[in-house]
Length: 301
Ligand code: ADP
Image 1 (tube, rainbow, N blue to C red):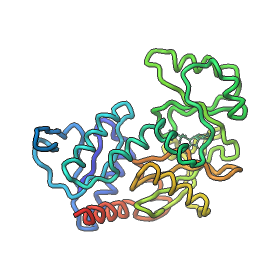
Image 2 (tube, rainbow, N blue to C red; image 1 turned 180 degrees about the vertical axis):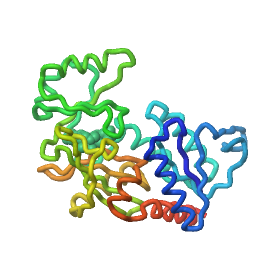
Image 3 (spheres, rainbow, N blue to C red; image 1 turned 135 degrees about the vertical axis):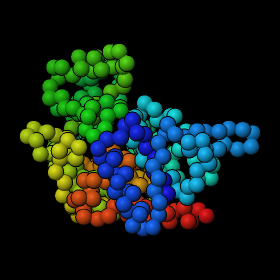
Image 4 (cartoon, rainbow, N blue to C red; image 1 turned 60 degrees about the horizontal axis):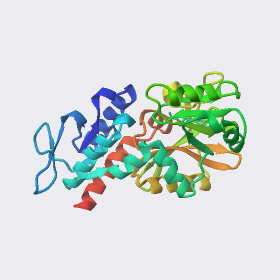
């Protein structure tokens, strides 16, 4: 048993997740060994692609990918995951799924192509057409997102027209410019969203995340949001399953906004944090993940 992450980007939550997974694996009689990207060597010859960990052939039944690297290094890390697949090792979540969920632009393309409900969203590189875009989205306020943010960082709300154009100018024309997301603001769900935790084809827990700070519209647990377990409607479940199916994910956290026109998917996360959902649900989510990964490896054998 094995997990995979980058020590340079280990946040408090990820460390805790690793601990939760290690405890769960031990309880179930498995050994979990963390592997860090920097310790992996990829070997190529005309025979076949090989993978080495600290320059030794690893004895791994299943690679449990914890994709906590930065989006900027997605290409390289995706190739590392692929190398384990090419070496015949069972991988959960697989490379194609990690790419689809880590690359927010690709996620939008996939969700939209599969007619999965999402807030109306534009990705743009110039403020030139902003009036038409805001009109199409609805009205102010609008939500602005960077392509590579996580834990609510890089998400902001713009209340009025004044400032939006210059903000876009600054973001997309500045040094290291990057495309910007402008999204419909779902007013009725302000400060709240739901996180659905799926392992295999099962919802193992669902919670509502609620922002506690006054005036905060972001409900991320990492920003101090409160959590409580909820019952999901049939429609919400269908939307969550459709999203993970479209992204080919085995293990995922799907973030959904409850809107007046039904559930809308905000994000599909291939590396969902365990701490908040474990506390909120009182369930051994890490244990569910380990059991699933082991089962998948056995089926493959
Ligand atoms: P991240 O990937 O950084 O968590 P999200 O897109 O999930 O970014 O946004 C963070 C939080 O901001 C969400 O959990 C939600 O509470 C709030 N939020 C994001 N987009 C919208 C939106 N379009 N309308 C209303 N609230 C939103």
